[in-house]
Image (cartoon, rainbow, N blue to C red; front, side, top):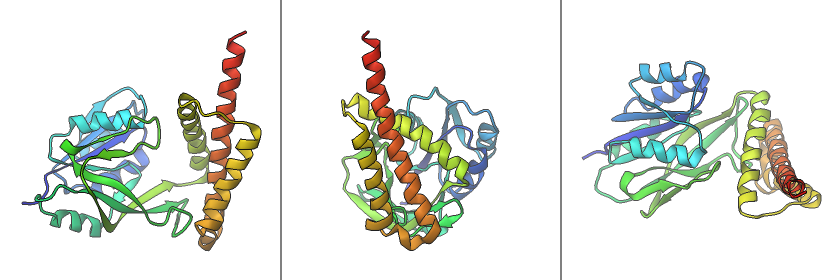
Length: 253
């Protein structure tokens, strides 16, 4: 018996990406889309592909994905982002699986950065848990960088989930701002502190890790730009964390 699968997606203004994503998962038994107030054609396009669309207020990535998880009705869950695509090889492998095991599956993800496929810098072949039994897993309630928490053993799938991270550099800057703010809030809630020295040190380490240790330089120009953007994200994350503590001090007076 093959897997009975609900694909779950969370969206907001994903008109440019959602069509290709939905086409790549047209073979699943059910598609659940939880939208947080799109003002473009995301909802209309999702419904045109047969997706069940629900509108929910935004409370962070983890909470939103858990909402989608609860709405799914099938035994197995395929979690996918709007900027991702299931490759044909991955589709065929998932369709060949039998519903006789209790594994969660970590899928190999290949990322495209502003039109270039990356092979290094930590983005060439990371593995992400995306296929799992609904009854045996949930998402962490993080604002950003949520993770699947499962009691099942994890097995790797070596076929690709294709990730189109950024289409242009304006998107890079926009997402650096959004994600650095969310990450700073998470660190603040955990009472982690920052300083100018720590900010500079962390951002330098992010660059060296991406470009040198993880061999980002082998991806040429794209690898350098990725290392710079990772460094910028880290810099603003810790800088914003410092400002959160400064604002707290001012509120006391």
